[in-house]
Length: 244
Ligand SMILES: [Zn+2]
Image 1 (cartoon, protein in one colour):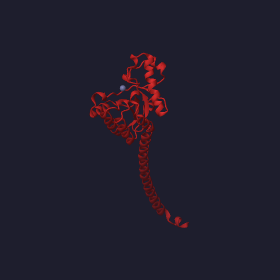
Image 2 (image 1 turned 90 degrees about the vertical axis):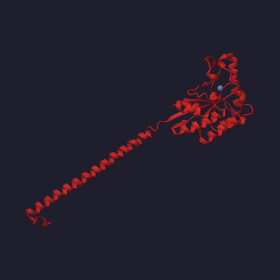
Image 3 (image 1 turned 30 degrees about the vertical axis):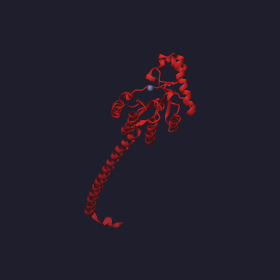
Image 4 (image 1 turned 180 degrees about the vertical axis):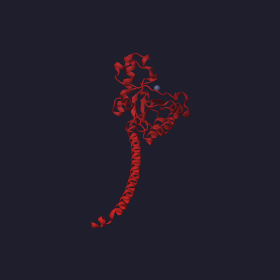
């Protein structure tokens, strides 16, 4: 349009000055905006990366297996099962054959509740001190008893006193499960001491030895679950632990 041309030299200079001011303002505005958005994006990146890190490496996952030997017990085992169910926790039981008769319902409940059932011999004898045939008979008889109730033959054995030999393995193809944390619950029968020992010694992958034939052991186990759950521990049966 002609109007522009009519503005003359000074008009062009004025326009140019305003143009420069405008340009500076625009650059400044844009700069601030860019800076702000960069800052946001940096923040975003930080948050995102933290989020990703948290997602890829969640709060250290710790797993532990609670195991109970020498049962079932007609009073304490059902009490334990109740507490485990309330907490949604699965454990492993190693049963003594001579304690099975009359407690079939308890064993069925173990299975129905998702616990793992293993073998702890017929009468708690030290297997390595026996003739191999007698030792194997101890295990086979208990396996048969459990199978008659649950329909499944146990795959895992915990030898009494942790005493096992390769010779036994040849005759009885079972997986032997020992332990890494032993609070000597049968000896102290003191709930607080049992809990303290476990909490002080537990680590990722621990197998904890307890006995569901004592009141204090059952109470301690439930308290340990509540305490360690808050520390990020996840409770599994020994077969799950050995797979990981
Ligand atoms: Zn035992």
